[in-house]
Length: 264
Image (cartoon, rainbow, N blue to C red; front, side, top):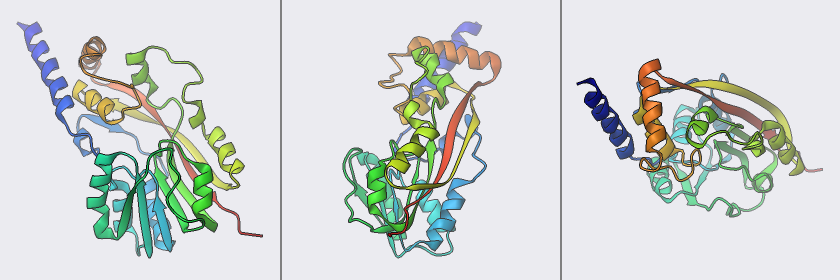
């Protein structure tokens, strides 16, 4: 009698994870189902301090605007000019609804397109988990003396989960996300790296619904993920979680504090 009960539990959990909307970067649904250790630097609260000191601020790849909205709410004052960019249409709608009351204009910008702002418009450019930082564009829209302040996803982040579904990945996979490589790219664009910190952080998935929702939401982890296409891997991971209590992986994060030199 035990096996059919487990079967129904698996199918129900997978269906639940597949039904949750994926718009935006609100991860509150994972409460009690997955946990992720947070970096020691407290990005959102640190961003609030930067926003309070800024006159004109741009948030790149803002997602659903949740992090920027929180930081603006925690800031002692808001920049006079606030803008954000996002490439995914569903997130553009969500971010606009969330950030418009804060006086922030959200602009739809494709990932590879130039930023639609004049040279030297902003004294602060920020981003939490940009898809791929466009250093030349960041340098262009920053004013001399302006700052890029961001938290990036590092190399081989949550790869324990990725490799469960895709098998062993090449050692150089996501190597362009290595903080040393990104430092070199920033400096090549004429920027000065004031501070760069990196941490690896424990992530735990407590049920297979959380795994399904995570892979649907963070689509670049397992490109083309579907429940049907990865049923075998989902089943084996469910059984592992049931036996061990959770599946443990490690995320990789680094904090960039970058400055555009004053004009000579």
